[in-house]
Length: 339
Image (cartoon, rainbow, N blue to C red; front, top):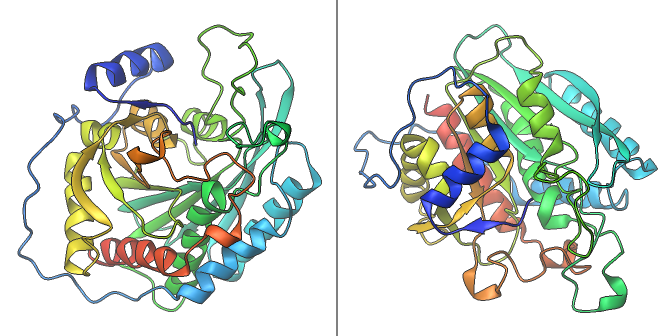
């Protein structure tokens, strides 16, 4: 994901206006940031749970293709794998093929994988992640490795692995609402730090979500809310209340965090605020007006604000926790089946 963290709401609003001027929000007026977390006294409905080993295997199977970078055979093979895997779980699946311009003008082929459960339901929940990996290890401690592509086990494969496990579980007993799982491509191909952006202020990250938000798979698509998963596989996770999510969707943040607390996961889903991040959820919120939050690991002591191996060659399966994947999947399932 794009690794910019802004520590004030005013910075978020400035970035939003620069990136998305002219876009229309079709839902109700945005809610103010930083609501107090309220305890929901309604008991959490019994929901199915994720299997840690299964979620871990889904991450490993993606990484086994090699770096899932644009215009590569690994990208094409993994796109087919994701389509076929979701189809095998009974979803209506389509691959949205598109092209987008990279920071240097090169045209990239992209594949957004879209899976719908209960397609006839009008009330829908959007679950999403990105599945591509970073073409540059531009934060690797070894300068000689910084032009190498990375495995992206956490930054990309982890969120997708959780949603594959969610799909596998939903096959056994569908929830009451419709669920759309969207796996975005070309999220992590933004400009490396050593290059100049040839297109001025044009935002060079999250190309797949920008394309889908402007070209949804169903004209007029809407959902009750959305949940984005990014970098959700690290051991000892810390999921803070990210400020972009709090600005656009504080009620959804409260719903998810309260659910996590009821499941005993408050040590990971912490009730503290974090800086604003430009990630796929920003474009879903601002272009489509679907209130969407980002569940993302936040680690200020690392320097970058993210996990220690972010955008390095060490973002591999050695640094993925099956138990963290299960935890996130359990929360998502409990929220979905609680509707």
